[in-house]
Length: 425
Image (cartoon, rainbow, N blue to C red; front, top):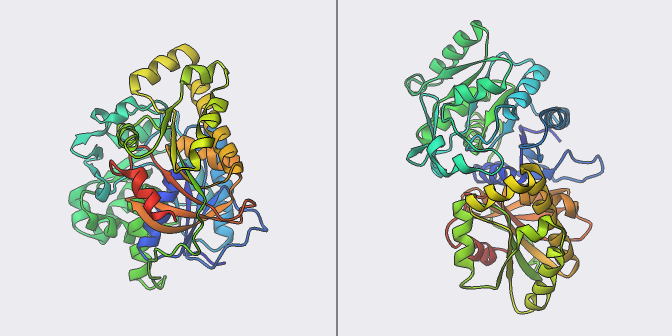
C-alpha cells in the first residue's frame, strides 16, 4: 500500500466526517479504528483515516497514540499527514491540539504547519484568526456550553498559543486571496521569524483549494474536514491521484434490527431526539441512576428488546447543558462523562448480541465508547446521510457485516435518525 494521504483523527465521528469528505472528492478511503493490526486486510485505497479517541484524554497519551498512527501512515508511503481536529477547535488550554501538533511537527521535521478548522459548507469560517460558527463567534455559539471542552475564546491564534510550545502566526484572508504563492511567501516569512504554526483564514469554499495546494507541499497540516477537502482536490488536480467515482454502493443489504443511541447534549441532537419521538419509541435514560449504579443499562435493554421486533428504537442519555452542569458538579466532569459513555457502550454491546446489525450513534464520545467496545477494526465509507456523516460498513469485524452511522453532536438535520435509517439497508 502506498498512500497519497494519511490522516489522524482525534475522534471517531470526526474521522467519519473526514473519510466522507475525501470520498466525495474522489479519493478511495478507509477509516480504521486505532492503528491497524498487521493482519488487517485493507483494500487498495488512496487515503486512510486512523481514528483515535484522543480529543479529551490526557495530553501525553494523545501524543503517544498520534505518533504511533503517524509512524504507521508514513510506513505506508504517506508523504503528507493531516491531523484532523473538530471544526469547532474543541480543546482546553492544556491541549490536546497543541501538544499533538508539536509532537508530529518535530517527528516529521516540518518548519511551519498550516492550521485551520474552517469548513464553509458546514458554517465554519475563520476571519482574522477568529472562528465563526454560522454567524456568531465561537465563544458566543452553543460550544461555550460544551460539557467537556467549553470554548470561551474565538481567536484561534490565542487558543493555540496557550497549548503549543511554538509561536503561532496568522495568514489572513487578504494574503490568501492573492493565491498560493502569496501564502507560501507569508509562511516563509513567519518561519524565518521562528514561528512554527500559522492559523489561516478561510471564508469561501474556494479558499480551501488554495490552502490545500499549499499544504500538500508540506509534510503536516492540522485542521477539520475542510482542509482535507482542499488536500484531496490538490492531489487530484496535480495528478497525484486519479479520482475515483464517488459511489453510494454499500454492497449486499445487511438488514436486521436497527437501534439508535444518543449521548450528545448539543442543541442539534436534542432537537433530533425530539423529532424521532414522533416515529419510534424513545427511552430517556436517568443519568442519576447511571452514576449511582442502579441498573439503568439493564432497564434500557429490558425496554428495548421486545420493541426491536416491531421496528427501530432510540435510547438517549442526552440532557440540556444546565442538567449536564449540575450532574458534573455533583459527580465530577470526568467521572460523569465516563460512566455515561460506558453505560451506552454496555447497551450497544448487548443490543448487537441480541441481533442489532444497524446502529446509529449520536455524539463523538459516545461513538468512540461504542466502537471501542464492539472492537470494530475499520470501515468502508458509503452513502452520505448528512454533511459529514456517511454510512459505514464494517471491515474485518468478527461479528460480520454491520452498518453504522457515527454522528458528531452538531451534525445532521432535524430528521437525522429517519434519514439515516432510509440509507442503511
